[in-house]
Length: 89
Image (cartoon, rainbow, N blue to C red):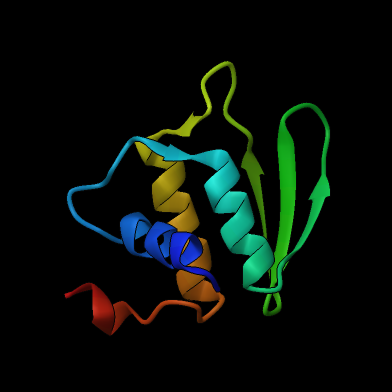
């Protein structure tokens, strides 16, 4: 992972939740982590990482991800074992 992807990961898990994370940065992070990404119907994006599957909605017309989606992305990364819940404290 490069510095920007590492920063995106830290920002995803920071409190309070940031609402200004760009979807393109999150998608870049997924790719750096080795995720398989495929397009679904409409704005859906399917992500498969470390045996865990998830479907997210690409934000539009804005490019930033909302707080609800960030919570879902956090849960997905925790389930995939990318981020340890002990590190959240």
